Amino acid sequence: MVQFRFNGTWPKNKDRSLENLPFRNEWVLIVDCDERITDASWDEISEKIKAPEFSGFYINRRVFFLGKWIRHGGKYPDWNLRLFRHAVGRYENLGTENIRNTGDNEVHEHVIIHPNDGQTGYLQEDMMHIDFRDIYHWLARHNRYSNWEAQVYLNILEGRSASGTIGSDLFGDSVKRKRALKQIWVRLPFKPLIRFVLFYFLRLGFLDGFPGYVYARMLSQYEYQIGVKLYELRKFDGQLNMQAAESQPVRSRV
Image (cartoon, rainbow, N blue to C red; front, side, top):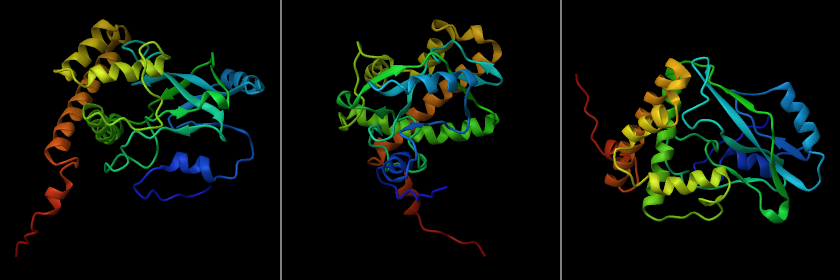
């Protein structure tokens, strides 16, 4: 095990690991602690990486919540480039590293492989994303994520286009299409309500039963958190009101 201490600047720990670890193999597979690779997927991976023209593969994720596969609501398919040659794959920088309490790892950033470094393909077998901890941890995690998202929203609204990202393209792959739609999404009013209606009704989240309903409500709440933190960032000049709290005198009671 190699320990890194995050110093609050880019790169975060995954990119730092790609730059510094003494890899024994050419390929890496990025898997979080709540994700599982099936036996069928391992077999597919062992065959796919033999193709010399490929340098990376997207893996689709099945998100499980309250023991239920959330198949609808726009949560599936959910493609991520997780399998790649470590020498050529690097995480994009979305300009969020200065926001506190977002974590020391690249979580929502995507891996970039330039076309001249090889092709990217898609695996047929899915990765299992099983949220094995309780609702408390889901809320705590998304409290951190909303800090990150608020900064991303602010960057888009203020026209800060960080270099070295995957980019956005309505006619590109699924990841780039999502990025292009986000350019529109951040400017919409009533996003918490829209997100619930979109997830639960328009994208058929109700077909996933009660877990689908709970997930839709919690994503709506998550969108509200992003919105109020975006307001906070704007009000306090790009900070989450940290300096305001730190500037208050400390009073002791005897």
